[in-house]
Length: 238
Image 1: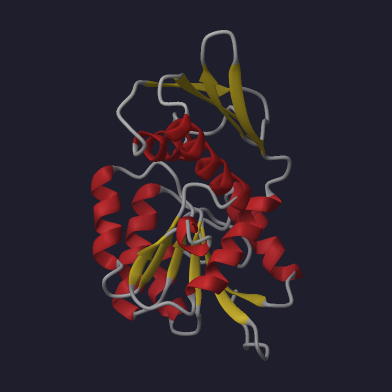
Image 2 (image 1 turned 180 degrees about the vertical axis):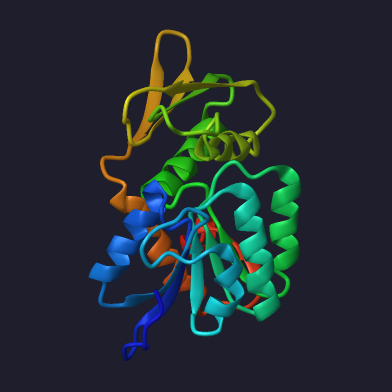
C-alpha cells in the first residue's frame, strides 16, 4: 500500500506482511504516530499486498524496510536494499552461515540490522547469561526453548544466539533443548546447574507485540547510522 508521506513519519516497507509477525507489524505501524506503511510485500496474495517483484520500486518512496519473511527472501531484500543504499532491519530467523556472510557483505553498502529476536528483554537475558557463565565457570549449562508448533526453525535463533554468546566466556558443553507445542509465544530458559543448587534465567514472551515494537525501535535507531552490520547489542552498547 503506497501513500503520500505524512509530515515527520518514517516510511516503512514490511516484508513478509502476511505472516504472523509481519501482519502484526503492519497493524502496529497503522497505530503509530511515528511511522507509516509505505508498502506491504509478500509472496502470498492479499488486499494491498505487493509481490516481491515490486520491492525495488517501493524502495524509491520509502525510508527503511523491516523483514519478517524467510531466510532466502530476507537475503534477497537485503541485496536490493543495499543496491539502493537503503537501510533494512531483518528479524527473520533460520539464516545459514553463508546467508549471514551475504548480509555482512551487503552491509558495506547500506546499514543492515539483524537480530533473531527483537525483544529488548531477550537481549538483556543474553547479557545476564554471559555474566553468570563467566562467574560460574564450572557449572553445567542448558538452554531450553519452547515455541508454538508452527515455528519451523529448531533450535530457535534466540537459543543459538544465547549459546554463541555464552561460549565467548569459555569453552564448555551447552545442551540445547527445543519444544514445539500449542500456541506458546516463546520461552527461553538458561539453566546453570552446580552441586546442590542452580540458577535459572527465564524470558517469556506474553504478546507478539513486543517483536513489532522492537523492530520499530531498531528501525528508528538504524536511520541515523551509516553502512555497517548492527544488532541489538549496539543499541544497548553491550
